[in-house]
Length: 90
Image (cartoon, rainbow, N blue to C red; front, side, top):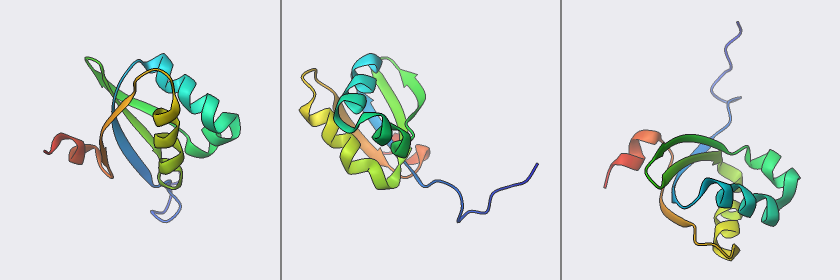
């Protein structure tokens, strides 16, 4: 299997979110649409209680956070980090 060079990998940001998974998905789809969903490539990494860790492409971070701000249901962005390990630090 061929390995990607670091320059070819997708650069990700990790968001620590408090909210419902269905609301998170719907807010992204309503605000940026299917094309924006494909560009952001969101992946739910893990769940702990009501908190979710969402991995998204670095270039689409502002649009995704904006979609949470205008969505009627409350979705809080608790922390943003470039690494998963960084989300655990205070």
